[in-house]
Length: 300
Ligand code: ASP
Image 1 (cartoon, rainbow, N blue to C red):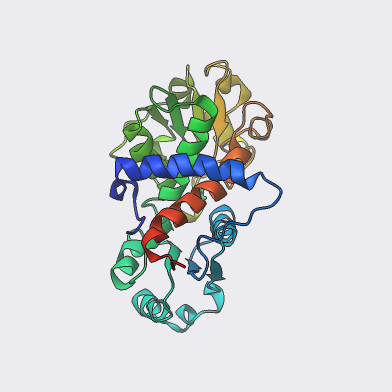
Image 2: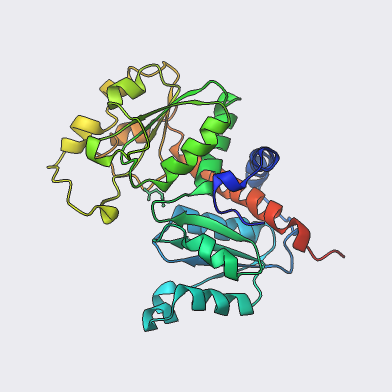
């Protein structure tokens, strides 16, 4: 079994990942953790795009379950000598890993690699495609906070066009019964998503998920001067005041403070779930690794 997109997961698998994620979240808060269920298994991380949260949380998740973890040094690899991704995948496969976690700038690259690998492959973000474990950790964070996802009004705002996080969340949160609203600058709205203004999206929302402008994926500069993006499209205190009184703010990170979100809102003790999302990220990735390796375990 691979974890390439939200659509590849069954309802039962999603429920298991969310339930187990919440359990690992509590477990991770214990002073000592000594689970060894992935003993004897090798997890390889191959990240062809930058990452802080996803890469580190997969490393920590695998270590906490007792696996051996190897992170490929892409900058120092033979990719730089012209090796194709398919040949790199064949090379990795020959080393017999038990799970490969891959992030790549080309949408669909993890699926191509999965066709070559004999082990489960997890998509850690592919271009503007999907980022399924981010959506799973976002759903787990929401469910832990509100006790449910069904019926929640969730605004997803920002650079929707280039956001694999938004794509995976749209698939997952809709499936779990949330009511989604989308907003962003007109030039950053994809053709297949009906979006409005951030003011419309935020009114009465239970949660507001802000997205970074993915300037590295823009073909043309946005041309916004300092403070302009925040003023027109960002989450300011004034806009957030129109959400539900108990509403929460989310962001997959990395945050561009003062661009898509006012830094004070991102840091808000009661209203911001951003740090909680990171903590849940480790827990949910433990649940994913556990699920994907269930049939590979060395039984004593
Ligand atoms: N970290 C997320 C991703 O890799 C979101 C972002 O980069 O803005 O998709």
